[in-house]
Image (tube, rainbow, N blue to C red):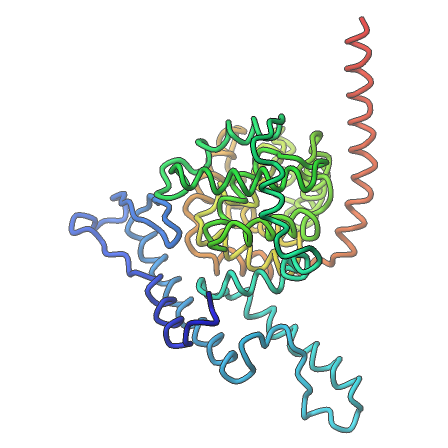
Length: 396
């Protein structure tokens, strides 16, 4: 896809992905609702202010793209995978120089990714940095196609659930909601359900895989991105039958909310609001059902590079951005309405990610891992108790 194109051609293709959204002549006031299509084909509803925000965001992405092209021109096409020897460290030895250079490259790359990967480069950068390319290289080249042939015509609980969910996955999308789109999504999901029979298929994966298809362009690349996501990026057991991993993540999130946003947490506790009412969908669908697609993919840019802790940062940011309004609520339903309204209109990923990583502060992987271990024990106890109660009831 990339090798046959010149950098100028790729640049033009990239720029063409950013049409300026023209305001309707009748949409002169912010309270007028307009519909428009985003970069990935989704129909979005918003007011004129939303349109203006999205245009500003796209202009920032254009500018950010120029930075990526400049780095590719000066350091090479895959500069982010190569440690560069720094001339600043001539006297400290090659080994130390390489370590220093890797550190500098990592800091530069982290900042760049948080500012957004240009859409035309996204498939290549994701595939390399996430570990999907490395994972694919460990099996025969024909692995995906062989897997599809092996599972053709097979009927399992997973395939039946997948067939049930296909028409409910982003209905109305101009490609996903077609015979061709359904067939492609089905192949990716069925293939993975046989690759990992322990996970099989879980509702939520259909939305994740669908968005991966739109970004990666090919089924095989989407399949490997799904594989690296479930096997390396996210925590174990998020998508198993009992969703134990998802339960753990929600409990960790509740602890983090109490620590980072104590006033919000106390207010939610007083109203009897359980964060799982919103966090379940956030963590299972990785925000793909909640945030606009262009914002979701900015979150995924960081997720594939920095890991699952990114989901906590973003979830905390959504609550923090609504702190004032949330503290005025008196009913659980009001809280859900505020959070849903906000997420559906979060067209500015820069605002979201700034709050997520700057306002909410630094969270180490080790700290989150300790909290997960603590919550894993509690979740397994509860699941075991539920199972025993169920068995006891069945015996009666």
